Amino acid sequence: MKGEYSIEIEASREDVFDYLADDDNIMDIVPNLVAHGFLDVKDGVVGTTFWHEYEEKGRKMKMTGVVSEHRKPEAMAVDMDGPVFTLVVRYTLDELGPQRTRLTQFSHAKMKHVFKIFGLLFGKKMQAEGEKVQRENFARMKELIEAKYGQPAAAATSSD
Image (cartoon, rainbow, N blue to C red; front, side, top):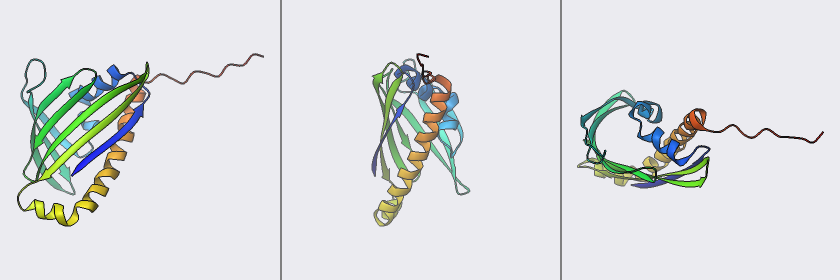
């Protein structure tokens, strides 16, 4: 399953990138992530390996990942592997102005083993649910980033 989602954020591209790249923010960005850590940190970030533990409807799933791209402030990507599926997630950041950024996420999940059958049977439903979760995640991420870095709207002036 492939997905693409974009949102415009009222913050500089550098600030949006820094927020996404800061490991301290990941629990706020990914709501079902319950634990995470590094396995091996590499200089230059690319090649750094990590683990995530997710909980969904009372079930926990552990995944490992590697940072496959880190080009500040243009793009970042991770490749993840778990017992049910593999997942590639790539973010691109386009500068729309000094304090406006378009954040786009491209994702590609591949089901493994017997779970491929579930993907074939329920793929459309799973994709629709995934898109709903993505909209919610991006709305939360936008709110968090704008609260931290966003510029307040310019006050209206009048010529009384």
